[in-house]
Image (tube, rainbow, N blue to C red; front, side, top):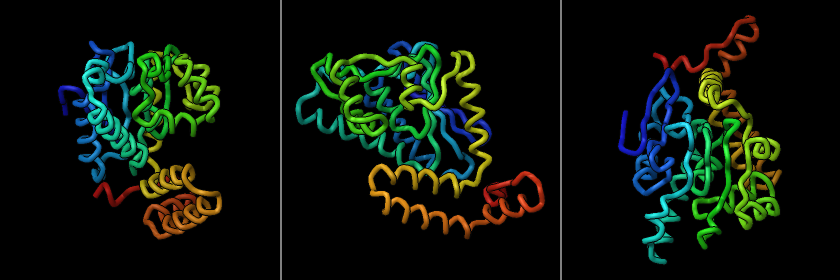
Length: 263
């Protein structure tokens, strides 16, 4: 499937989404957010797709921010709607029932970094640069950056990057746990696809429940989180995939999950 702002490709059980504005370093505008929102809705119940990869077209950028031309024309009322719409799309990614992996292939600034932070897993290339430079424009991050970065690291470090506008390189992002791994530019996509394939082979039930349990931990107490975990653990026991997993273990073979989705 190809749109003006996104290029989407289904590969095995994986949906690859490429932000497709390379001449603008894949800067996020309203059109790209609307198309991304539509793609997420279209694939939410698609049983053939088990993992989503998001990356940027070209070799320079994942997404080098929001579209400044659009932002510069906003009124105060428009700006609130603009911010809330982007937050809604990124919330949808964060709460998606299928893993969403960001492959940060270069610059990820402003809205682009906020998009990556909303994804469940982030991998990056060695030449990646990330940051929230909005204060250089007299703005603050508006797509969830103030909230998600402070939860990924801590409020002091988040404020350091937000208030200074300083960029972080791939090594610093890895050290702080913002990205899970760093690869060469040539190998980023290959390694991201390999991870997606490994996840796609797992029980879709256990994957979805894992996402739900981990995401809920950011907004609940430990006791509430443990209660959610126990409930989701018990739901796994009632699935065909659990029966297949335990049977395969006892029979000393590799499990074949999600059989009902293949029929």
